[in-house]
Image (cartoon, rainbow, N blue to C red; front, side, top):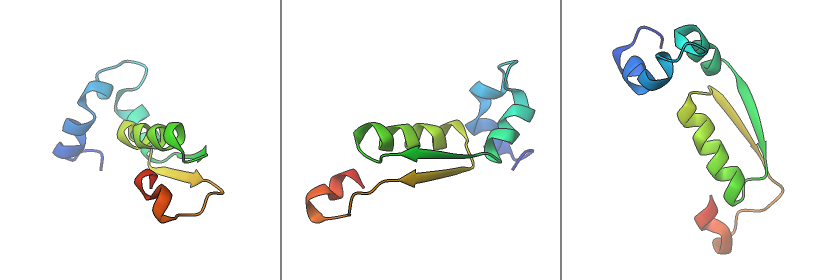
Length: 73
């Protein structure tokens, strides 16, 4: 992905930050994180982690997918 124009465009705002840069963004893409709880806060957090560029996000939740909670899936 590094070197791809779309990759650079997608993460352009993070690539210009000295603490992150291209190397840091590449490392984020190789990182796995876990979010425990996929309710309102957990699902939003997971989305933000993906948007930041984390390569693998594991969601852990004991709830069962049902019609009544489908809007949270």
